[in-house]
Length: 175
Length: 208
Image (tube, rainbow over all chains, first blue to last red; front, side, top):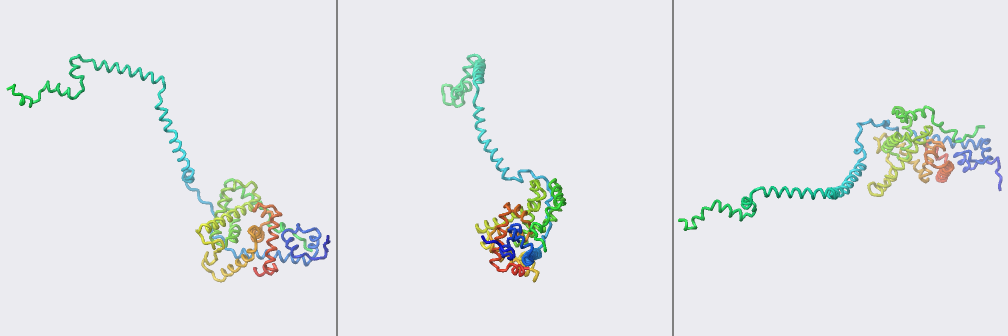
């Protein structure tokens, strides 16, 4: 392996390496750089050029037009205005839940427990008896006159009670 | 004989105590303290974004975004000492988003394909101020030519180190890379520029 000549100046690559981080140079080269005025001058010039470049870039960049300031706190907005997607999702979920829940609820209300069903049968029977008593409250003759709900029969009863006028016209026996 | 200094030694000192104090006060909800931090860091963050976008308007917008994000997430910063690196990290991320959106727009036809390489000139951003603006334009054209040879990461490391004056340690924190990776990118960047333009000192002298 070739040994470095301690007197040899730093190559361009070594200068760049030193410029990036001098601690990355091998000890002998670092030692040379520390003692060699020429190499040191090269390094200083390179550094100075980059410092100048940064200064020039700074000059060639405009200054910010306006200072940043935090926006003033406005009146607290309802969260659904600031997060409309979340609000829409929540509403959709609620509608879906309602759609799924409602038919089940209807079905549940239609289902009558056995105990209630027995009570209902007893109630119906009682009301039938009451209805029968109400229907039979009048004497049979009156019931015969009024019980029929048939319209033709009702008409014949009315005709018998109050005969129509034209009946006399047609029946000469009355004259 | 002059003692060789490590690049770290030339870098700005780590966060001064008054900055740390302002960060802590801002974390506690003090908006005035935050505005004092903004006043201190806004010019350099704005410049950092301008160096990359070359557009005054975009740099303005991005700067506003960066500080708004900084304020929103300030409570997450565990060590106020690294506030500057953290701020630059937000700026780099925001800038990457900006270029990603530009590429996306170009892909879907909302912007011309040339938009990617389009650089707003000073004349477009502000009323022309003759010689000064021409000088600016010429300078940034030369810088662009110099950076053209570099990969995205080499370019970013180079800009952070020599334009934004961040130390190697700060760059590692900003980019989330280890120090040897950062040094490798920086060394490659310098070497590529040297290979492309010959004598780097002449190139830099020409630029300045």
